Length: 177
Image (tube, rainbow, N blue to C red; front, top):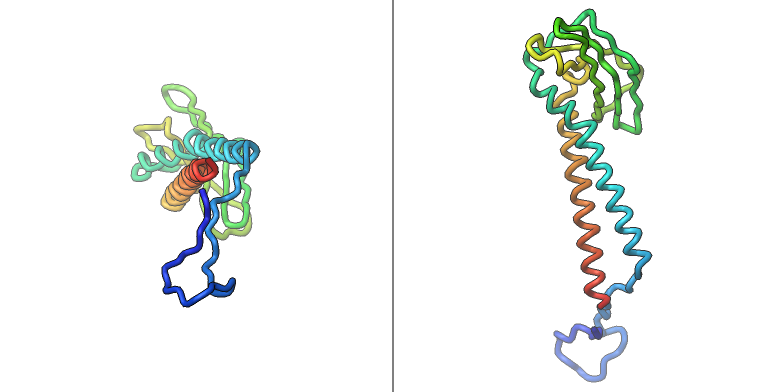
């Protein structure tokens, strides 16, 4: 492919460098190394999508199912609970245990939400009496809309980045050929 200046204006004599439009050139080919880095980045972002689907989404979906009927469960336990904050993104993990007439229920929950908060979080275990297997916390239910929006934004942004990276890779491959 050859580059040529845009010659849409009338010609008034010999062209000088100042009056010529800039040349449009195809991007330089990055070779296999650039392709490898893009594919590694895409693989990492696919890992983020899988992590969201396995760890964060199930807790959000089950909390939507029990949000209306959930009640505090005084004899339930929280073990291995911790939260970490990166700027305004909070990630909380906890293991919830509850004794029911059908046996013990243990559930690991992962909450990702945004907001400004200083200090510690205190939580209470909540469950729907009809569905005790979907045990959750008041923190998860209080921040349910925030968690849903955060999850959707992360999923959409990650998916859009994957699509854009692959489209750029294909476009640059075609331009270099």
